[in-house]
Image (cartoon, rainbow over all chains, first blue to last red):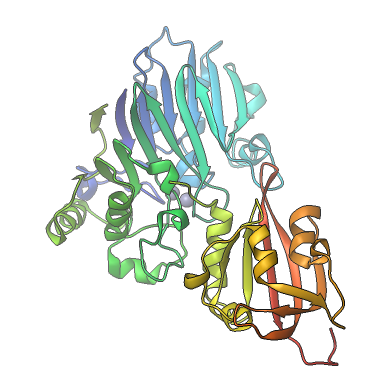
Length: 278
Length: 134
Ligand SMILES: [Zn+2]
Ligand SMILES: [Zn+2]
């Protein structure tokens, strides 16, 4: 399984010379199966450059949305695959408590917010309310479960040949905890992320910033590190960088976390364009 | 390691900040949590009592109706919320783990998650004044 980070920014795209290293595109991660299967995690603005690499012979692509906040779907209408006649495009994501994924997405992919209607797209588009359980996509094992973030939000675990990547871009497991981390049984995302070989996790804030944003649905980097340690992840990638954080701040945050304690896993700063082989 | 669904995790966190006694049951009728104010009514700290099965519960916490007559466990608001998946309210007597009988008002509602998932039930209860409004 090969994983590529196409967008690691959270909340709002943040292009510019100050963010050239970590990147300015919002959440989008490519997961390639051993047989060339293409799974795309979230459709932030990073999905546009990913589009340019699509193999003309590709027959099917699956886009797995964690939730429908704008930074995770803004690139969807600019995904070139949607305009390829005959390409099978499957979009998976959480329904709300009252609406199916299709109705929720149509609010964005329709005028006045977007010029094209979903039904007018030439690709073969199928929308799926994501099962909150184990399922399979093209032979790859996928698990989705609801996690702590405002509005229905899932994290994903994708397993192939015994190796697992876990994607939790927007996640605040420390919310309301008297002391974090608590027991595994009472920790949001624990079962999903347990023993992950690669954990891509929300690390939006410094501890000082988190104190001002409790309940916004994101984690401080030290909380993300504590979560990674709790679930015994082998490698953690920081993700959903705050748009206010330039390259210097992001590099310092990762350095501080590495210095604060001897980590039992590898901590990597989530840099746009980075690839990981599992 | 089994993990509670997010709906129960958030319920427990919310309950831990309330001064109203709250008791949280999991889908199989396990008592998975009660908060500190509930400890005062039940007479034992949750950390000491731990998670309990429904059958254990029935033997540990004895209940009667308000006038002291026998109360079927199916009539308890928490069981109505769990088994019949509807809210319920009742004034009853409960004997906590400290052996004391207390008159309490109990209200319960089911926790229904999206995707048709029945996740458990929540009961709130507090000591009632004898003769007060139930
Ligand atoms: Zn986000
Ligand atoms: Zn979000």
